[in-house]
Length: 158
Image 1 (cartoon, rainbow, N blue to C red):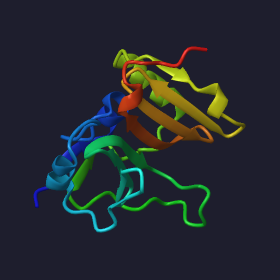
Image 2 (cartoon, rainbow, N blue to C red):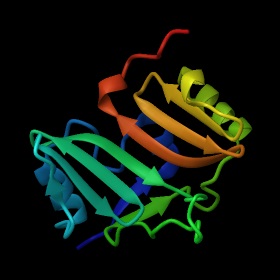
Image 3 (cartoon, helix red, strand yellow):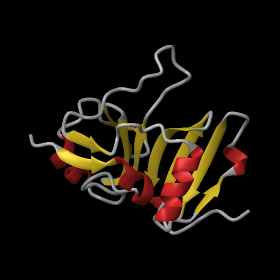
Image 4 (cartoon, rainbow, N blue to C red):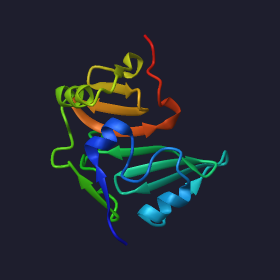
């Protein structure tokens, strides 16, 4: 299987994970990343798949979320699982960007973002962008990036 290029910074800005995006059919995910051995659905029909450091949630056969986990500070070994075999991550040399780097990247791309204060605490900050991307920052560095189509075009008001 040929590797698909995924630009990390583009994912952070747009929510597109290479050729994949929220709303795509599950069959497109399988075509791009291969069969997922641990794919399963709950009793409500929500599907869950893990491809290394990438988690994908589906509903009624369509992609609902695409999440890239960069670090896991709550575990003894904070290093995340590697990326899927089928993925070549670009712009990923230093993925744990700082708050200032994320702000600059989003501003340069003209992407509006909002801090979700209700989810924040002393060490964790959550951003939500108008593109439907949630960015979780832990101790001032990116921890996870999650595209969520249900929030695209909407930035929570204060």
